[in-house]
Length: 305
Image (tube, rainbow, N blue to C red; front, side, top):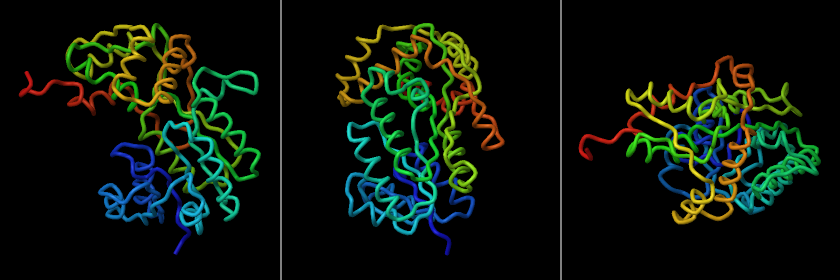
């Protein structure tokens, strides 16, 4: 049997990157080892798909040996966390020990504008930048994948309530342009790299959606997708940040999200790349189509009306 491809973070909710990558690789007939944090229904769902499921912790050395041994290619991805750098280095050290031949690293597009003298106010951005440096120093065969803001993030999680309740997109993005990309497009790129990594070793890919526009433009796209008028209401960053803290989100995550909002306002997300189409042969999803696919989330139910 072929060496399995390792996918970390595979137990995310339906639509999450790791889970989607696992599904795509299995559909291609690849052997996949799916790493999960806990043995639960999501782990069983991965088994039902045909994945080999291994329980492990990115910060635990012994479990990472169990997870990585026997894999020639692996995807490393981790949610926003103050332990991100330690987890990356731990995984990289074990991967190098076992002779992994391709380490596909999920990073962030903002790093293209960072350096040893230029950073952002987000502690997560700094951890991502340092993680990329450590991976480059490691000598591992690395590919860095840097998506921009995900449609499933700000455009689903943080706009659904206000669109549903008041037909407004309420985000602290100002007049800044942005080019959000869908998880399914990021996952298609990752699956393509994992299936045939060697031509891509040492390269960096930037993933964006098909258009870079401001939020007033995207409000019109919401309107077309939902069949009702949606408007954009800019809001100040600080009260929005306070609201996230009141919802119980970790300070590390909130500081990262607030920095992303500030960078949007400053036009730093006005970026375009054709890497999704180049690597997969298919262009990325338009926001209007994404909203249409998720129309139920943005629409009050008849019972609630």
